[in-house]
Image 1 (cartoon, helix red, strand yellow):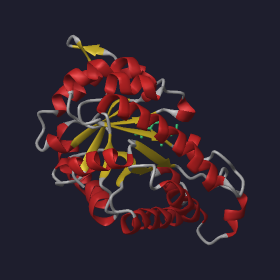
Image 2 (cartoon, helix red, strand yellow):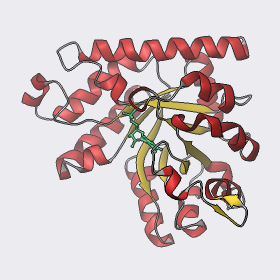
Image 3 (cartoon, helix red, strand yellow):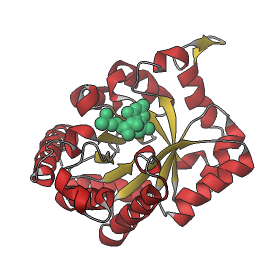
Image 4 (tube, helix red, strand yellow):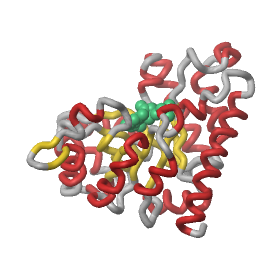
Length: 275
Ligand SMILES: O=C(O)c1cc(=O)[nH]c(=O)n1[C@@H]1O[C@H](COP(=O)(O)O)[C@@H](O)[C@H]1O
């Protein structure tokens, strides 16, 4: 998928919501545990209930890998279900990969070719040759961690070296890499006050913004400082939507939560872009 197609979908759905699919057998409704593949059934119900309100789905692979081979099968069924039924939706494998070049090439193949995701999250710590193998895939997107939503972001990412914070160096340096037009960046919603500075360095890039909902980030603050002329934001929420209810009505309640975020997004879009 191209970023232009993603942008068109945002305008059409009046939404830049990405629903995080972080399925946890301890949290999903108990009646699903009797099915053959509870994780897939849970995801499928959430997808069916929210696909018209969201432009992206982000399965976090940890929540699948935790269940071994069964989890990988559930992940494959989930991505196939989205690609077959809702091919317009942008998909993110949240795997936070990155390794020496030949290993990164294999990670890229796994997520872009075998599983056919549109994008994958990557850690920048190992530098250029660990990220460029992902960037080599055209119309696939590499979403690199810049300033993360967690408290530990302050351990390294905001430290200053050579007069500049590390996250700013990550943003600036990565722009010089081969095929950097395939880059997007993760910036946590809990760090809204940093968005203006980040936009000075990457004015045109899409930013994946996790941290509204369960982590307490503010959507309006993120939009105020982080939106660009093409919207340029994908705002993720997982737990607040997918675990809105533990009962038989979980999908209905997930839709209500997603709808309330989408409506807030629609208001913001109409005030900023008259859509
Ligand atoms: O890369 C991510 O998606 C990510 C980066 C980050 O800085 N913070 C962050 O929370 N995430 C992921 O985004 C999701 C947030 O989930 P909720 O807090 O339940 O909405 C989880 O899958 C996290 O692993």
